[in-house]
Length: 244
View (cartoon, one colour):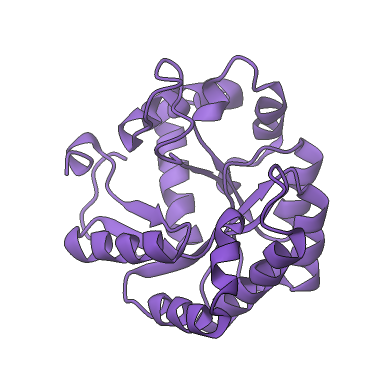
């Protein structure tokens, strides 16, 4: 509840499985400033195999919630050997279809799977729904491919890490009107909190680093990432708004 007092005026809480998507919508019901994305992370897709029809039906029902603004996080994660890659692909495609059916953007998780992610997105015309590549971790060349599909690029605490050269190069390449800020709580807290539980209250550290990389003011960064998020999630501007 301290977030609005600290100029974090809206939060899109991201589901990673059926249970966390349910919790996300419960939070959205409880707090005016919280919205939700519902979906199943590639690492959790194995659970959907037990009763796929029922799982698909529940996901579709959750997408109809009045404060659901996206399908996610969905995608591919080849860092781990499980679940099987074909299972991950199956549910990635199925959830892309769901997003189209519900006219919602997607939040895409892609780890060590750049080519397959991009290929599936192209094949399924994911650009028709749009969305964000969450916690972007690839090269500026891959960023260009996702930009060409109309996607936003999500950036968080990793940008402040001393060893994040590849991400910093990508961010310098990205146009400011396609960058959104993310937390990925409880992971990836920015310096000086690296290794601790993350919080949206730490976003100013990412803003400072982003402003330095782009050669603009922190206020310009705040304004841009607010406007980008409103466009990404197709939200209405609040009637009265203070600094983000």
